[in-house]
Amino acid sequence: MADNPGPKSSFELAMERLRQKDADTGVSARVLTDDEKSAIAEVRNIYEAKLAEIDVLHQSRVQRVADPSTVDALGAEWRSERERLSAERDRKVERIRSGQA
Image (cartoon, rainbow, N blue to C red; front, side, top):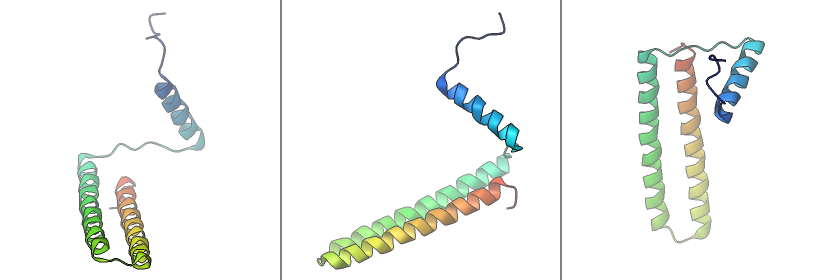
């Protein structure tokens, strides 16, 4: 009974189930190196800055426009650019995680 440290949290139970599911499907966990961690952090910082830049540019454009249809068009363009940058960031991070970059 000394091996039982007490009740587990729902988080711990969920993580155990996920690890077991990964093991059953053949997915192996790979520990990231310090270089990979720093590369991921750098990519995230760069894209955070790019996203902040387009947010500021979008706000300044919206403030100069009075036409609602133009504001809607600018909003659609802004959302599209944010999605593109986010997807690009995620691809780069995944490439680093998989050891390809």
